[in-house]
Image (cartoon, rainbow, N blue to C red):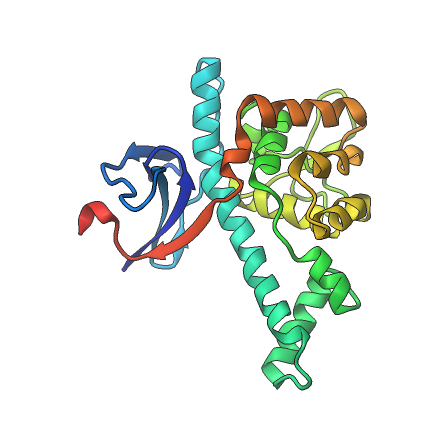
Length: 266
């Protein structure tokens, strides 16, 4: 049985598919949002027999700059929204049990698992860590770190964010003329999930999490990620510029919807 995961995003209606090679492609949907002044963009990830084919070993080098940017967003956007949704489901659970006087054995077990996963010792610390990262910020950093899907690490290692292999170096790829070893992922979705986890857990991004908790806008949050690169302030300016120049903030209200059939099939 096939299940389709839609992503509803303000913009032009698109219908995305992952083909047998794992490449994400999009087709226009003829349906529009009749009850809204804006048209919705619809992207889907198809599940068949509980196994998802995520994009893997994609190279966009052959495309012209504007086409490359469009295709890069088309590939990364559904993965980013889905990964954020997973984190928000965990957060929803933590919030639901945070004010309970007594938890069920199952709730206790699940809460302990999440505390351990996010390396937190209190509920307040956990809530600061279990949260989504703005889509616009993730897209911009992925674009910067991967050269819009042209870097060797993006193509050969599915590493969209320049993530280092700090401990387990059994699955890594070495940078040229350097001892730096970058992580190798099975697909791009794993890369997105690992990036979000790193932002939510690493000591280097504590100020980011504090600012997010206070409701800071995306440009303020970018400033709290200066430790992500040795370029520091220059890196912050670069990421901000990519967000602004490409209008990525229009994706920050993305929604994730589960459905069993597309509107076109009804």
